[in-house]
Every structure is written in C-alpha cells, then in structure tokens.
Amino acid sequence: MPLTEIRVAGFGGQGVILSAIVLGKACSIYEGKFATMTQNFGPEARGGACSAQLMLSDTPVLYPYVTQPDIMVVMSQEAYVKFASELKEDGTLIIERDLVRVTDLPKQTKIYSVPATRIAEELGKRMVLNIVMVGFFTAVTQLLEADAVRKAVADSVPASFRELNLKAFDRGYEYGVSALAAGPETPDLEQNAAVSQELV
Amino acid sequence: MKADPRGVLTGTHFMDGDHACCEGALAAGARFAAGYPITPSTEVVERFAQRVPTVGGCFIQMEDELAASITLQGGVWGGAKAFTVTSGPGFSLMMEHIGYAAMTETPCVFVDVQRGGPSTGLPTLPAQGDMMQARWGSHGDYEIIALCPNSPQECFDLTIKAFNLAEEFRVPVMFMMDEVVGHMTEKVVIPPADEIEVTPRKHTHKSVEDYLPYGTNGDMVPEMAHAGEGYKFHVTGLTHDERGYPNMTPKMQQKLVTRLQNKILSATDRISMFEEEGTADADVVVVSYGITSRVAQRAIEMARADGLKVGKLRLITAWPFPENKIRQLAAHIKAFVVPELNLGQMVREVERAAAGKAQTFLVPHAGGSVHHPEEILAFIQEAVR
Image (cartoon, rainbow over all chains, first blue to last red; front, side, top):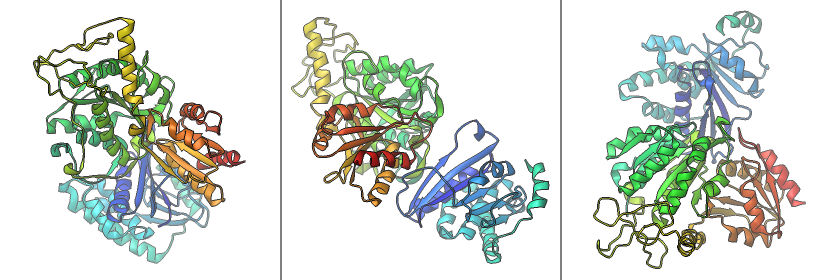
C-alpha cells in the first residue's frame, strides 16, 4: 500500500478516535505494515467537530499529518463542512447517510454512504455506529484485510461488548460489499443543499 | 539486572507516546512520581497514577511544579526510582530543583513534553523550544543528560534508557519529548521483562563506619545510601564535602563542581547516541532531533531523488552535545542544515562545534506545527550551492 492519508471526522461521542485506532491497529499490528494516528487536540474536541488523522503505509510513516486526504470518513454535517474541501479531487468520501448531505464536491470524488446509526440501532446500541463505519470502510476501500480489521475490533473494545461490535463490523462490511458492487453514488446536490442546513 | 516483570506490559500495542513513556518508566522500575499535570504531558501521569498502585508504587498529585520536582527527589532518597512529567511552563518552574538534583547527585528523570512558548504559549501544539533551558535552565555550572525520542516506540525504549543513565551517573536526565510525539499513536512493541536491561541504584557495599555519602572511588560517581538504612545521611544543595556537610570554600567548590561536570563530559562519547546515515560522501548533513527528524528524513529523501548528496545525523542525545561527531563531519562537508521547532537553539551548538569549517543553516519554525518537508528541502538546496 502506498502512503494513504485518511481523515475520520464526526462529532465528539461518535467514537471517531476509536474507529481510527481500530484501522491503525489492523494495519500496523495485524498486517505488519505502518500506521500513524494523530488526533486534533483543543477545545473543539469537546462536543463539536472531532477528527483523527490516519496515515497507512507499507513503509514507515515520516510526516505524521494529513496534507490532502485520499479518503475521508465523515459522520456529521459539521465535520463535512469543516473538512470536506481538503479531500483529493479523485478521493473517496465515506459518509453516514442520515447525518451527512453532500453539497459541493468535484465530480471525480467517489462517494459511498451507509446508514450506520440506523444499523447500530437495529443491533441494539447506537454507540457501535463507528464500528459499522469501520466495517463499511473496510469493504469499500479494500485497503486492509477484513480479517485484520475484525481482529483489531475484537481487541479494542471491552470484552462484554465484543460480540456486539463484531456484529456491527460484519453488518457494515456486508453493506459495503454491496455498495462497492453498485459503484459510487451521485448525490442530488441541489436537494441536499436545501436539507443540509437542518443538519448543522 | 533485568526488569521487574510486574511493571512490564509485554506485547504489541497501538499506543501514543505519552502512554509509551509511562510504560517505559514502569519497565525501568519507576515506582514513584510526583506531578502537577499539564497539557500535553497529562496522559503520562494519568496512566501512571492508574497503573503504578498495581505494582506496588504510588503517584502524588502535588500543589504545583516546585513541589512536584522536589518531592520526587525525596522519593529517590527514600529508595525509589522516581520521575516527574511536565511541559514548558512547568519545566520553567522546576529549574531550581533540577539544579538541586544535579548538586545532590539525585538520580531521577524529568519528562518535558514540549509545547509552544514562551509562557502559556500553545498548550496543545508542538515546539522544541526548551532545548537550551534543559541544559542551562538552573543557575551555576552543572551537566545533565537529555534524550529526544521521535516515535512512541522510542518514548518507551528511551525512557528506560533515561532511567538507566540517571542511575549510572547519578544525574537528572531530561526526557525531551514534544506534543506530536506525545500524542501520536503508533505500534509499540514491549519486550518480555527478561529482555529489558535496567540499571540498579548505585548502592554502597561499604559498612556504616566506612561509608562517606559523597566519597568517590576514582570513577567520579559516588555510591548512594538511602535515608533510614543506618548510614550517615546528609543531603544539601550547599557546596558540600565527602560527608555531605556544607563546606563553602573555593577549594571545595572547585573540586565538587568540576567533578559534577566531568563525570558527564568525560563520558560524552559513551553517553552519546545518534543515527548517522549517508554522511561519508555527503555535501550537506541535516542535523535534527525529535519529531523534526522524521520530517527531515522526508526532505532528505526528496533531495536525494534530485541527485543531491545529503547525509543525516539524528541526535538521540542532545546533551551532552556530540561535538566530536560534528567536528569530524565539518572537516569534509560543505554545510549543516539544522531544522528545529524553535528560532535557533541546538543550531548554535552545531555552529560552535563546526568552528567555521562548514557553514551552518538554521531552518527555523516558531512552533505550533511541524515543518513542511519542502521548507527543509529548500535549505538543503541552498546549502549545496
């Protein structure tokens, strides 16, 4: 894998940082490659837009910060507004379908969406939405081995929630396999622009 | 001797630098810390406070940094391996007691996770602005040792090294992290306890009658006895004789302070750790340390791709400064390029050691982020000309 820059963003409490930790762990520990994760520290980490930067690579990561992300995972409209413009033109945007409306992005951007919160609620706990996103990410990007990410999920969560989180991973992954087969989505930018205000 | 397995979290972890530093301290045998938590170093003692009671130690949150930096020394004289953790503003407040540790030859570690300064500066953002303060911050003549990790793995490995050097030389060791290294998360491999070498306290083997608290046996580092063990015990920041009693004569001052300096300076080549690569036929050598060394590495690779002959010297120990190494390189290269997250600190040492034989270029940065590799590359290109 060439150096891949990823930003994961959402609001505080969605498990943004944990999802980046799981992906970094899968890459560096279970696949034996290299990963560096940094998180934004500051007042905005409390409640508002929260983001993690993740660098994955076959060789040691030197520069630890995202300059222009290849992939962006966005779980809130506020995070979308704050970060979406930095995504590479032909980059991949992965969004929480019910919480994010894509309003203005270049045509080349590959967009995939998943109703992660709804799926998590179906499983009984909204808090596992981040692991649904992780499963979806794994299937859509094909950067990491599903098995490696699954192992990283298992050892990053408390034992009593392991089974639930693995289910969340599997559901997200299955959803991602279908989404990838269907191809990138084309959002209705005009309609989204009208609705997006309500989400911020 | 080998590490106490109770303190060693053997395994492969995805861990940030602050936590790795804490695990390094535990593996090294630290069983006491006194601190006044401050961003971006808080996670070190947060974890230590949680972990250390399970291995028979304790953490005390003090009322301020002055208290923290002297309480840890009380812990050392009581027999523990001890440290404190801070950042710029707290490091400034600790200076008096760093001098005290140097004067009383108290083996201990001061972790400074550097952030932007001066004063309150940038609490959550990186800098490398405390490098001269680490060396010169307290008054009078003394020497310390300072290490600069550039990854969470090194935060673990070098924290152990810091404790070992503190014990070997009976000196306060400055562990100069920065916000980026402290807060970045990467793979950290913690080996089994029986693969970790730790240096035990240089405890005296003499009888109570024969022991002199500051008597040396030719190797410049006195043997230690702890409070309450029955040995004569007198610890003072005043100029003192071999018994530890105040002796404020020019003669005693000359003898004591010279020894405190020379026990470190005479061992510089043995203490010095650096990473050197591609310097043999280099025109330019980039000298860097801490997080900046990783950005510098990217710049070096870009320069080499353009056909430039660029070498790398990464300082792992900043103090004592490896001036022999700089002198040797200066004899056959055109220039040094020194990127730092400050407006020129270690570059002065490079310039001094190069003594005009090679040019020196500072790549300054006031802090708050790291350099862009292109900024360093531009200086390399200029230096080659």
